[in-house]
Length: 305
Image (tube, rainbow, N blue to C red; front, side, top):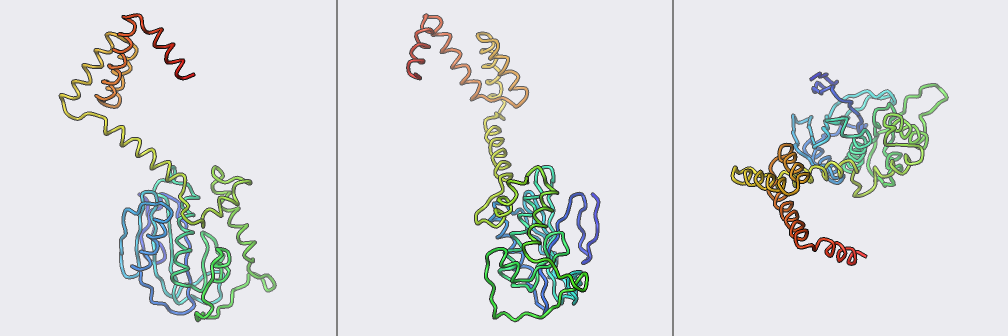
């Protein structure tokens, strides 16, 4: 597995695409990495993700993993951001990646990161928020306004003058930033976003109790597979019984018997399925023997209407 070392010394795998963001503080803050990791776990669980592990690597680093994602938290000091003129005394870096990009969409990954930023913004009250994979840095008030939140105006905040690209051009306002971010996500994941659905899907990132449809589909498929495995026999006598019933069905109804034999070879011996098939086969053979098949079909048709 290919790896790279990030600016703080933490080793990350480069097999997948990493999305990065962060919270900047204009004054020194003693960040509790354990408490911060617990907040991120809560935001993941609110989205429907199942957190599989939470590792506190050091007093400044933490790793959180789910069935689909892995996220690194790193508390740094004296960090320079291209959009700000002054260096930040304290900076919380957040990096996230999908374990399997074929099964987890870019939208799902960015949604989890956005909700984590929202939760950490509420708990830590940073001065600036560096948005996902861009050089755009939003002030706390702009970020809160975009989410419809309110911030504590009594909280002391340092004064930092944004660095301007040109002498007469300021950083884009929040509406321009939102349009740019929405277009960036759309371009990266066109299979999910389109021109009509993109605004609604983007708003769902911050909707309470929203769960990614991909997660629901994955869990449903896993539940179906688990139920199928429960019916597969492991004991030798039961497996042998399933084969005997399959051969018996083949003697009276060859197509059904062949189907059962193929299922036994492909998925394993399912005694319940073989028993039900044998019972139905015997029922129809009995009806045919006494000439009652036509009457039974007529009665069934009358019931169904």
